[in-house]
Amino acid sequence: MVYDRFFPRVYNYMRYRAADRETADDLTSQVFEKVLAKLGSFKPERGPFEAWLFAVARNVVNDHYRGFGWRRWLSLDAVADRPARESPPDAALVKDESLRSLQAALGRLDGREREILGLKFGAGLTNRAIAAMEALSESNVGVVVFRALKKLREELKGEAA
Image 1: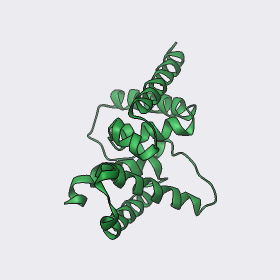
Image 2: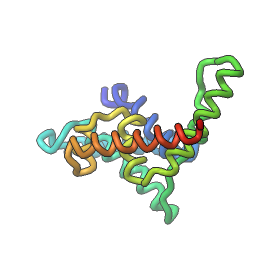
Image 3: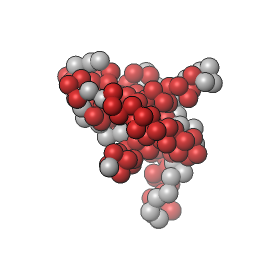
Image 4: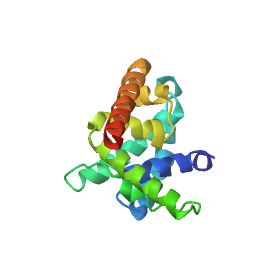
């Protein structure tokens, strides 16, 4: 049940954070192994289940990169090879250019902003769930998202001009 309900979102989050599809597969399976092993330690009074689940997912990614002795943010190029519906070549070109612009703009955000946007849009978490994970207030998460999106819009407008 947990796997069926949360797999797509956990995997999507891992694709944003992992260097390749195989690593995302491995990390996703590690998340569900840890969740099943530690399910008894989940305490509903401390926050929603999905916040706990994505805290486990974030820790799995951090442990993975800690093993390399460094931490990096994954560019959107790595997730561009996901299977997609066929689109006309001109639409694919516009999409690729937009993705490159977005990647460059995301690269200019700080790590906290990228992490929160990844949880918000990659994992589809609510501000409340992100706040529980990041030890922030729900309104603070909303402010970070708002400001980060504003920065992205300004960066993308600057590139279009």
